Length: 443
Image (cartoon, rainbow, N blue to C red; front, side, top):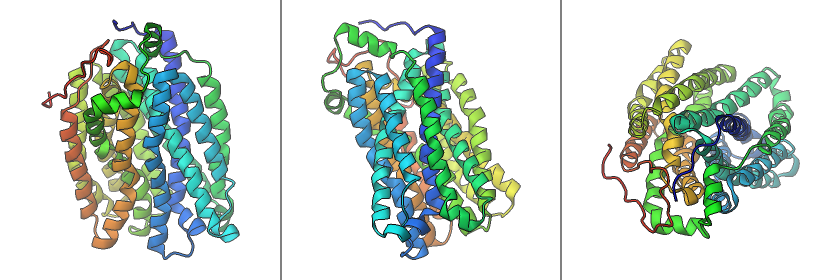
């Protein structure tokens, strides 16, 4: 079977917009939770614990969703490769929206006792399941609809949904932080969760109007739809799943320590106010919204260049955690912003190249499953537990150097793993019984 041509440019742009908006909605809801977990959930849902234990328990509920993401990736990846990308994206957005709205209605520990954190864990699991299936589908819809010379750009634009979602979440909490502390803790924190219903309705409206991926449509017409995508991926491409997982580790660790852990670190240990720290994270996020599309467009020079860009960003994340923390500890707000800019420029290079680089590692008919498995397992190792690990290391050592070393080691692991990944040529299929061998160098 030969590769299909890219869909019409107009349709491709429509799909890109739908993926971007849907991804923004999903990540807004995810980061609203992460911000609330850092700022208020330890008191509202775990008040009987000492401050450190309460913070760790609160962040553990953030991590629970990451554990659920590989399960969601396996489920939605299976049906995405069997039934199509579009229907799965509609379902993931609906689940995420319902779970997020429910968090805004949850009673606190003071109201119902231990039932409150249990309900919180339940809705977090639903969020994790839906996000596990969301990313792979959103990326594939855009990359598979894109013209060949715009694949990197389209994948990068979808990845800016993380920044737009985080920016919206932080703007919401920055506005609510102006409330008196009592009002914020009693009802203010619920507002971002409840308002998610509006964003979900908008996202669903747009997603219902886009066409199915032309790559999947061609596989379906040819009768070569995989019967058991997950089984086939594990049998023939488990090595690629493991490498993709490890290649993501540094990206996730840097991002979640930079955007989640930094909030509590800046307020509790450096004496900055909540608004100041949220402002710093927002400034870094604004930078990524510009840098990611630029790097994505640059990555379209060639497949080899895209891989090199990914590796260059990871190399930056090996080195830059040390100056980032050093600049934070100066207590100077302008220098702190410089530190965030340095760290997130390197992160943006990797994150811009990643969607198209990762999407084309697997053959078309198991691509949703393979991408979702590798990516979501990477988020567990690299992102889900990073804020907890950073909190623990800071408590045990009393200094940021152990956290910086942890991020640097994650970068080394990701660099080595990414050296062995490569993009497949158009038209390479799994059903020809010839699994592509793993590359043996960083070329």
